[in-house]
Length: 470
Ligand SMILES: NC(=O)C1=CN([C@@H]2O[C@H](COP(=O)(O)OP(=O)(O)OC[C@H]3O[C@@H](n4cnc5c(N)ncnc54)[C@H](OP(=O)(O)O)[C@@H]3O)[C@@H](O)[C@H]2O)C=CC1
Ligand SMILES: O=C1O[C@H](COP(=O)(O)O)[C@@H](O)[C@H](O)[C@H]1O
Image 1 (cartoon, rainbow, N blue to C red):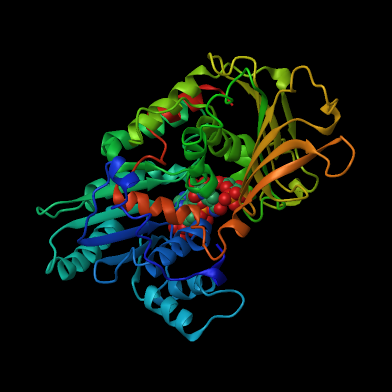
Image 2 (image 1 turned 90 degrees about the vertical axis):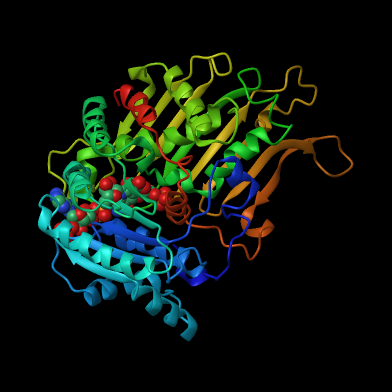
C-alpha cells in the first residue's frame, strides 16, 4: 500500500447508497462494529489487513464512535507493542505531515490486543469479554452489534479457530446484527482437503457468514472486467472463438519467497497464484453475462466456466524453479516445488471451444507485472500485408500502473501508404490524475462489513476449482 498517497475522502459514489450497490442488494447499517484480526502478529496482518483498515478509517468508513479493532494471537505483547509494530506500516515512508501522524495515532488507539491460543476457550472468552465491553459502551446509543473475524492465519488452524468463535464469541445482541468470518487462501491443498475444510467450517457457519477472500477480486481492473465486457458494445460481438485467438493471463513477481519459504514450499506457485488468483481472472474474462449484478448471479456464471474447463494435458504444462530458491533456510534442500508455471486451460463451450487460455505465474523473475492479454485473430484477406506487425490485442494491466490498451494497425503518418502498429491507451495514472485507487484488501474488507459477497469465493466455486487436480 502506498501510504504516502492517502487522502481523506468520503466515497459516496462507492457507498452502499449507489445504484450498483442497491442492485447488488446492499443495505447500509450502523451500530457497534468489532473487527477482530486473528493472527495479528503475522505478516499479512501488518502488511495488508491493518493498513487496509487504516485507509477505511481515514475515509470515514470506520467511524470511531462505532468501531473497535481487536488483534488476537498467541504472541504475548501489550496493546502498545502491537501498535508499535504496526505504526511503521501506516506512516508514509517519504515523511508524514503532523496531521498524518495524528491520524495514525488516533487509529492505533482504536486497536486493542488480546493474547490467547487458537484451540482453547480461555483466550476466546477473554476476547469475547473485551468485545462485549466495547459493544456495551457503543450500544448505549445504537443497539445493533456486528462482529467481523478476519482469519490472518495459516489454514491449519481455521477449524479450531472457527469452533472457538462459534462457542465463545458470537454476536449476542437481541437487537440485531451479525457475525461474519473472513478466511484467507489457500482453502486446502486439493479437492479432499478443500472439502474437509469447507465441511468443518460449514458445520459452524452458514454460507452467508463465510467470506473466502481472494484479494485479486478486489483489484481495480479485475473489478472493471465485467463493466468492460458487458457495458461496451465494441466487445460484445468480438469476445468469442470466432475473433479471439488466445488469452494470456500472466503474473510475474520480481522477488522470491521473501521470508515465506516455509509456507510457499508446501503449496508452490500453482496453489499460491494460479489456482486462485489467475483462475478468478479467467472466470471473469470467460463467463457469460450474468442475469444481474447480484452476487449469486455472478458467482453462478463463474461456476459454469469452471465446470466447462477440460482436464489439463500434461504436455501443456511447464514448471520451473528459480535458482537460489533452496538457499532460503526454510526451504528443504531437496525441494522440487515449482516457483514458475505455465498451464494451458481449454474451455469446452460454445463461446470458447479451441481458444487456449494460457496462465503463467512466476516468482523471482525480472519484473513485477500482472496482466491479461486478449490476442485477436489475423484479419482475413489482409490487403495491407500488415501481419508481420502483429495482431490486434486488448491488454488489461492489473499492476503496476493500471491500464487498458488496444493494439491496432494504423496508417503510418506521412506520404506513403504503409501501416504501423499503435495503441489506444487508457493509462489510469494519466486519465484519472489525483484519484487514489483503493487497495484490494481495503475494498474487500468494506464489502464484508456491507455484507456483499460478490467478490468472494462461494463454496461450490471452490469445489470445482479443486476438482482440476492441480
Ligand atoms: N503474507 C501474505 O502476503 C499473504 C498471506 N495470505 C494468507 O494469509 C494467511 C496468513 O498469512 P501470513 O500472515 O503470511 O502468515 P504468518 O506465518 O505470518 O502467520 C500469521 C500468524 O499466525 C500464527 N501462526 C503461524 N504459524 C502458525 C501455526 N503453525 N499454528 C498456529 N499459529 C500459527 C502466528 O501468530 P502467533 O504465533 O502470535 O499466534 C503468526 O503471526 C495465510 O493463510 C496466508 O496464506 C494470503 C495472501 C498474501
Ligand atoms: O496471495 C498472494 O499474493 C501475493 C501477490 O499479491 P499482489 O497483490 O502483490 O500481486 C504473492 O506475493 C503471494 O505469494 C501470494 O500468497
